[in-house]
Length: 103
Picture: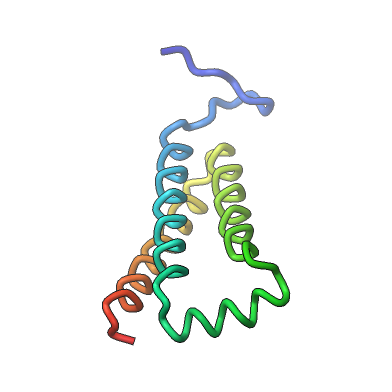
């Protein structure tokens, strides 16, 4: 398969983009599960931030993080991809805590 050169003359790494995209899908799934959980902490947070960002503001922030991670992954930034993977892991732990009623 022939790789396409980017504007900088370097080949983009499709694996980093794919991994960031899959992590982004996981983040959106976890975000939706937590938002619909009805947990008291989440409901208070939605009321507070909803006044400032609207009902879908948290999804916009999540999308901005994903776009930034994918943009920098396209520039071959392994560090940003690993940082986004760590962010996803922290989201996973927080989602598990909230959904399993440990908090």
